[in-house]
Image 1 (cartoon, each protein chain N blue to C red):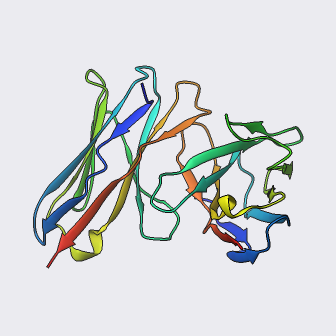
Image 2 (tube, rainbow over the protein chains, first blue to last red; image 1 turned 60 degrees about the vertical axis):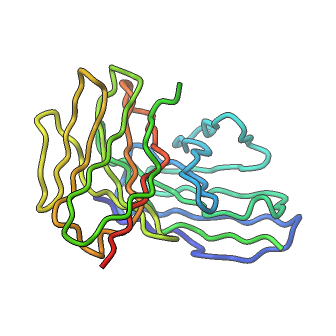
Length: 114
Length: 110
């Protein structure tokens, strides 16, 4: 399985600001995903990060609010823009090494908005 | 209908008990299946993949029933350290989409 480094591990931010979360993998992977998990809830997929092109967003998530980059096969960023307290959550990146393989998750970013 | 349905529990069982979780899925063409474990405030970690023939890893047994479209996880001789949330995950027939169950909470009691 891949080794995934996700940064920052946690942050406390002021409303109206933006935060960029980084996800670095130690090997090339076919797929990278960004999830959100609110307290007591299951994971919600935000988007699939596509290498060299725009991310594919799930219903309820838009690029202006959650811009995503994936410049290569080992790195992706998620920005949470113009944050409000409702954005307080754990944000997780995950990767898939190859076809029909399971996802492996980063440690997550615990984000609190004041 | 949800892609994946999972009983949220909670399951509270004594140490040493055997406990089973089921998860049903709606797409009969789904390709692959997994069980994850998630501890409180931690990321999900892969517990085991689920193979058509069923597979076992120590005290854990995973099974797939394609005819009835469900997967199961059996935990024998429960330990206190097994307390966690268990998530089933189904990969779509295209291989590009993963569907998560809501998770089943397990507490093993001394």
